[in-house]
Image (cartoon, rainbow over all chains, first blue to last red; front, top):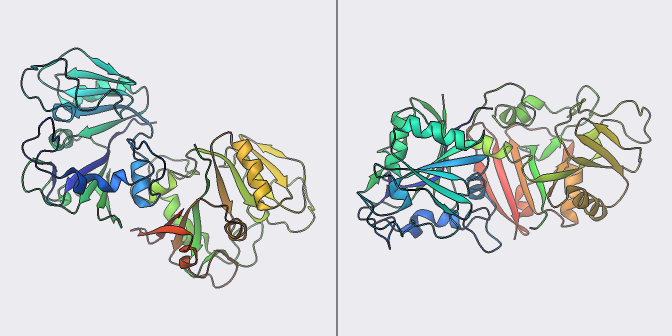
Length: 214
Length: 214
């Protein structure tokens, strides 16, 4: 069984941004409104951060359901772990994800500023300074035969796309403009030369873009 | 965790039939053309009967992927097991599904004509003469905490709908008319009083109908 590198539940604005300018401790997505971007996912029964019962079981739920399915490791950019840039100033701050991060696997955080690994509940963050192909090799080994999720942000996904390492992508395009920030694409059509694509509008307002390698 | 009763990947024609008239050993779906009905599913990477690598990974694949997910037992009508009606004439014939049936769990076949259970690879068929609620109770116990799939045919699904026992349904409506046979509905709108519904057209030509209880 091939170990795929998969993007799951990555959200961008209608103008192609994964996050706005000026991310901070209080506002991880900067000038983007997280409600307008992500509320479709939070409404589903299978949303990985859901704590109460209930939730929808329509199209959007089929997508959130796959977030953790057959995933053995995640790769993310440093900006998804936390807001600090440059040398770490505060090693006590252990990222945005709280005591029980939703990843529940080894996570490889790409950064030029490495630091010791951190284990929080069933997630362990490793900090690696390496190119995409090398990080993917490490993540595949850690995933023990399962797939690897490429968690974002947009810049990190672009790096892996540029290196032609991504097998499948699920990108939800939300009906909101951000204007500037961290950009995944100008248009999803940019990927059509290398990927098949299904474009699926949902009643929730987002449009799911499903890509798989040609 | 609730044990759901789920319909997954059930196919009907645009006029609401799950199979045509005159099912036989050679033509399990009778006068319906199985290619026109089911080719969307066979094209997907996750189709449970797929034997070669490859296949699509778009919308249709998200649906076939859920066929076995968290399923611990199946319930089916006798017509899905085989074509014989009335008292069993030939106990040596062990159904349409070959030596390795795709169910891979206990399967409860509803029939007024019981017979000894049959194990084929990792599927065991039990033949039960009972009402839907009783069969569901047996299937839930066999599923050991997992969900139960309601496999069809259309008549069997109708019985469970009439008894209000179904939690979620994925029905793929194929762009082909059959005219007569085993009917699921005149219109999917019949279920709107009791279910939320997402109607999702696929590029393959089928329209996925996703229902979940209000």
